[in-house]
Image (cartoon, rainbow, N blue to C red; front, side):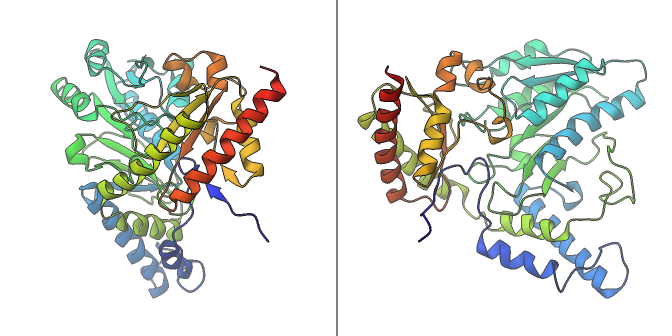
Length: 394
């Protein structure tokens, strides 16, 4: 009999919902046309793409023509940042633009910003966060320059769950916007989509990124919302798909999948309430049953499904392996950065020592998580941490 899997790593990826899977299957077999073709099979695919574009636009409270499909959030973040820098330099040769980003962005934002700085293409300011993982909106105002063309702040952090004050930052950016249209405001909303208000009008952003595989859709498909009139250049050239901004034959099945996935998010606040109850149960039981456990995630303004917890005298990777042997899936942090042996940059940014960071585990709940899953996880976790501490002789 196959071992039962308790999956508590939903911030890494999610299972494809059966309704999403059902929606996308025909586009691999019967409805496999290329949307660029004018015959019926191609036009059928084109209609499916445009339906998904409208579903996504309705969810984000924007126009369909402001939605661009990509291969995922990493590409969307790169297109947002590199595309804006590229367009600015085309229009302002010889000038070096300035970008502001938080120190706890997803690696796809941090690394492209670092690369732009390294290559002499842009100046970058990384905003520090406090011990709860929050950017001070006043720092955005402090570090704005005449040359600032972009502010990029993640909506909710993927490792500790801190929700940033986007509306406050948006007001600051808007109040400093010049006739040129700069600075622009971008947010990576990948972790926020299931639980928070992602109306771009509400948030006041010019660009917003998310993907399908964090919302029970397929991997390999992402979205970049770009406010109409935003100056941005393509990074990929080809047949002119996505209004010449992102060429390449459309991933029709993936696009249908992301449209279906967002259309199924009917009540984010209700989903958040359920997740919050389960997370509270998880945290309370851990604190009651396991000594020297410390919660790294903030108590307030935090995603309802993410809890980062440090277990003194127990190495995080060993905990992950031990739980995996019992059929429980958790992570030591962001899956996108898990191949490095360095301590989590997010946890060190909020003041944890490298040792404490290495003793941390991220639990991220999802819509299939049950009370039984939580209770069993804590029972196994307590036993395994006691065993690991005994082996270490500490």
